[in-house]
Image 1: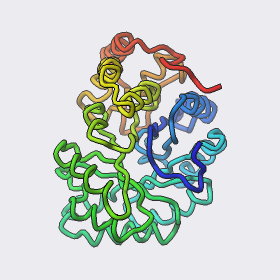
Image 2: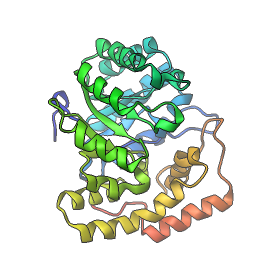
Image 3: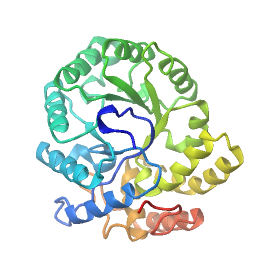
Length: 319
């Protein structure tokens, strides 16, 4: 196992869900159960908390600190990546300090929503944001790269500048959603004088993305199918295309269910899948997210059956 002090973001890194009680409070008992389930998958390199999969946009500062504390307690030395979701650089820096004190091994930095209205034309804003975080902590940073069309993605030139000017940037979580640009990220960023790993989160075309040469994947789908992600990752590393295609055929129905329109319901659907698999007791989500209807839950159930997944997972678990 990679030591926490030397952690370099790479390999399979599932982003964990956050169960809630009916009153929308955090269900700590079943959060611990979920963490143990994901951590029990042989071959993962880390887990991620306080990110989209855990509905971080609905969580207070204190709730995020508690989410991290529980994850570190349950991780038994497995590195924990903590999300930094903030519209202001000052709050982002405070979250970074909290995460370092709480035992995180790396930080996944979300783009501030405040830059969505033209921030791509002011790259110095992104640089200032990351430098504020880097001044608050020495933890390795992961840039969450969004699609350019939504206004939150960094241009290629800005990504390179960030990697060159902020020495603690160790990786990007690439969701550019553009295969041509994604390959450019892999070829250029991983061959900079100080290499920056590309972790794909292109879960809707994961096999294709991994074959380009990413150094790993960081995905919310890992909250349910981390075992299949590990199998696919290993098959690609072994250049075993036949096995990779077979595993991808099992992943396909789950991805079609999770990432169907509307896209924002992806983690809502993952919670429903976890319920159907007996891994958590309910699929409560915080508003404005809403409970899925019975027809969609039936589609998730059918996808689970097609993928051949059961409550214990589809590969061997750690002891």
